[in-house]
Length: 278
Image (cartoon, rainbow, N blue to C red; front, top):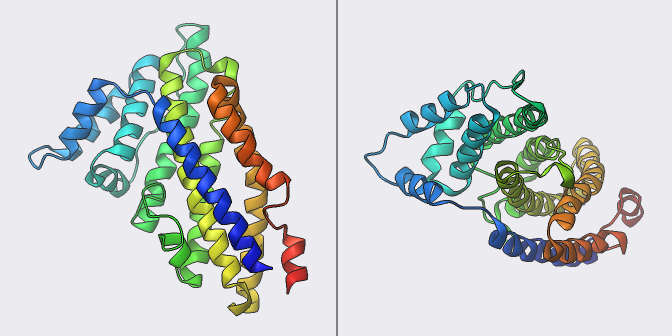
């Protein structure tokens, strides 16, 4: 029944938050990041100028310089004053790195691939903020959270936007043996933390959809069911992403394995079960 689904997904939600707490310990934070975060909270700091400086650095030909600019931008989007991400969302374009390639060596070729993928995610993160006027990773979660209390009409429009951001993140698609330097590791940990927050928000949205499933019109029910089917598909992709963290850190490995077992042991309903419930 729907009630059982809610209870089981609440357990999954709290497990995700527990995993997030573990992830915080491993996040790479330098003194430079701390200074920049503090700067975004100062009223006399020019946010557009700060962002434009990072965009300028991202036009460098060196993969190291560009990757660091992207990581710094991501860090400020997550931890800086909200004015920073608001400014990014107001711009027509952010990072235009779809053709970036550092030809200085084999390492440059390898890292260029991840720079292109990473920049696409940051662009999508800013685009999501522009569409929603809030950051999915920052909003309140749980029973009285934004996605759990959102009206059905708005929820059906919001979930595809959230799915798009999650898809862009998962397309980073790094393997453990490719985490070969501090910069890509920093990017991976920021993506990892974003994914946990986004998925918790995603889970809240699915619970809300199923709570209101039998109150919706026929067309809305079809949309909700399709969203849920895509949710299940992304469960597999999220698990694959988290397995990279398993290899990188034994503690995260233990938490992720237990979390994913919630799905394997039937804690989450499949679309066929929703139909049968009706």
